[in-house]
Length: 202
Length: 202
DNA sequence: CGTTCACACTAGCGCTTGCTTGGTTACCTC
DNA sequence: GAGGTAACCAAGCAAGCGCTAGTGTGAACG
Image (cartoon, rainbow over all chains, first blue to last red; front, side, top):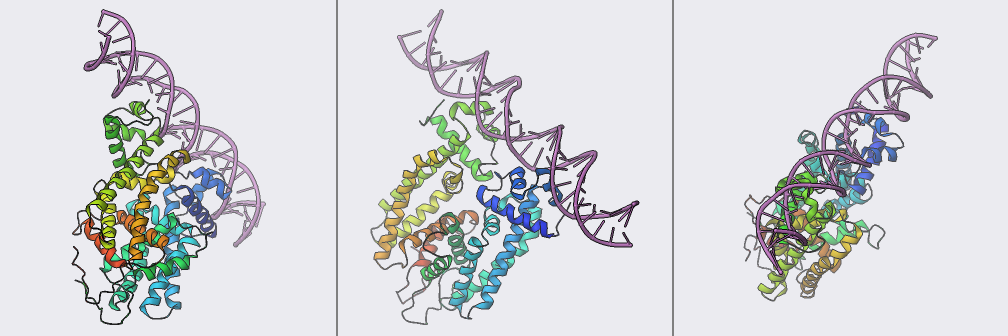
């Protein structure tokens, strides 16, 4: 019985589980389906995970961890002006949603299924990820690039991004980067003249 | 065995079912839980609905129907400029989400659980609702009020609105109308140079 | 009065669920 | 070659699931 460590085998199983959770949802994914996808019998599954919820926790941890890594790398690699950083974060978010796809989607949509104790352990990962967003949004607000309440803007932007998993077709004409750029363009104050709209909100 | 008609009793049961579906999700809501909430035994439930999925279908139909009614009324009651109409649609959307709450939320999040045949019957309702949105967005684009691709803008806006059910606290300081106004303000091309009219909505 | 009908009940069937148990294999280390 | 260990399997249990069958009510109607 493994508890929290990450053997290579367990990592692979987690990746497969994420795929099924995205397709079917956590509740409709049975341990027998998971086992079959992994090429083992259902009983063997409980050698790697204590119970079904621990599989979900592992998937969500993996997804959030990955999102954090990709976002940090994106911020490191991009230029240092507010618009570029905002664009980089939006692109990174969609990248985790659609290329790494599975785990991050599960993290977004099945969070509630976790026991409070388990989600408490993961919340620091999530907080770190959200902190990145808040910093970028704050910079964009301070630069007059966008306008509004910092709390609401970040929620709206993340909502618009997260909802893409409901309608986006990866085989369609648009790339995830196109989506990210369009969203950033949509919310940016089209400044024909620069400067004075440094709106300090209360 | 009722099939599609809507007796008053069935309507009430549908309302109660929606409440549970929002709280627990469709899969985790058992027929015994539904029956208890309705004050009857689980067997009696199947006098009103053919099976569990028909309950979900009834809830979703109710939710979409209601959203359509509220949106139409909002458009009728508001002034006839693109900004007012956009604001009215956003407000109406959040109104269905949070006051009528239950059914519309189920319609958004449990759509996939429906059999294709059942969802085909409901798709015309959904199409009608989306048509309202597309018309309003098109007007706003034509008026230069917002900018971007009509398809993407509507998806992003609806995504931002729908995602509110994940974080909005009805007991908090903000009203749903506040949220709607902030979102509209966020995406509007602010070519009026005087001002950060932030808290000043309506 | 008898018939009908909407509505509810009791009882439980057949199946699936998450999970446990006891044992087997293959490999590593000393 | 003895001992340990990670990985797996066959078999199945207890609980819960959606749903059905058969019956009993009281009100409405002729």
